[in-house]
Image (cartoon, rainbow, N blue to C red; front, side, top):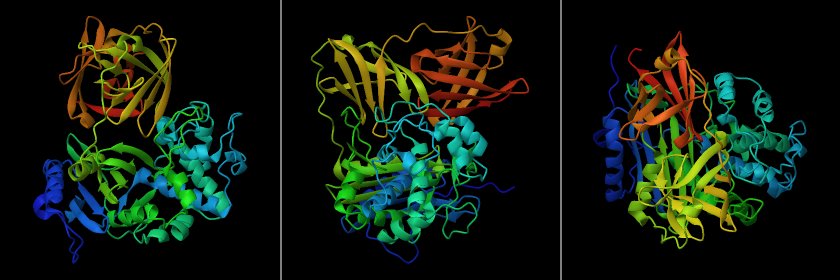
Length: 551
């Protein structure tokens, strides 16, 4: 069998045939250098990048391959699945119906979906748009995706599954990224308009920006210039897992191109899609019901990051990832579409481009005027993918405040009041009479509200030593570019990852464990008495690591 070789970008990167674009040599060199590594390593299929400032095209280029197996170069107008970039189109469709007077955003969702069980709660339609409804997200329900991902069934099959789940929080009291909410919005758009979601967008939304190459993704239709999707593994690229587009729906089922999305951003923010009032509703974060500010608007985020203030949204779906941004201070548009997951981050490419063009504002950090030890404590509550996450604010060996249990442990930089920065994240402590009572974690795409309080004793169960021993071995953690070592020492199971301190796995059962220090849960997959993989879940993130070699 002939092996597929990576399509090296620098010499063979493709542009739309016959079209010459004015490029910024410095910017092009930067992106060339970023893309070259993963392409040459065989860990990336292809990527298309577009950068426009005002009416001037700074970069419009495709790299790598649209089809790795056939060595087909990737043109800059290749059609990608764009995942959650879909959400801004869904929000626009809802606002178009609101502008007509056909949709009441303050009405309960049951006004349009009367059979939906809100479990005695009032859930206004507007809370679906900014992920504050409290409804359980279906993409965080492993059973739902396992059962339905490859099957074309009626959409209410999925609704029945997440409708039966308890609410993660009371409506309006937190913001947890939620694909179920956008799924329901698609159904509401169909109910109000009398058209399918796909037809409404084709007739009313895409034409506002002349988006001739944008459509609802089809698993069957022939699409000119469509890119294949891939996943990067330790053995190279593999084809993306199949996903029936019944399910991403209004939360993530659109397909588009870099040129179309550049045109869309210009039209949307140039007043060609919505009227002024509807546009302000779209791009302005509304905050929580108690007045706590947030940074997620309706299908778009609004915050300051690399390059300065931006209105943006990314996306990820089997085999594809995407990033779209508008920088209002510079009238600049950035679109990055990648046809490989587990490889090049479109967000990182967009950050590098924006930083090169406009720099990255640094938050005005200062020295905390109070006693940092007063903030130390344990907090728990719902986050994406975990209805009861446990985190701890602590001091490291150098006396810096750190947050453990939700992503990598990193020091926090003091900003003002009791708010700290962790990258683009904002961490705020609420104190009553000097005692912490609440922790707000604003991650731009989510705003988690955790309550202070002791987490209680670490609970563990007795495990058969033979059952524990079968998990010993090395596991490929591709997403982190590392190998995890599982070993037994002094009657306990431990994990070592690179140069990080080893951590004890506390048993919940023969094949299920948790890690107290980082609030992670580890499940070993056993087939015919042999452990073949481990699944690590930490907050909203889940990683499946294949076992290396025998055991």
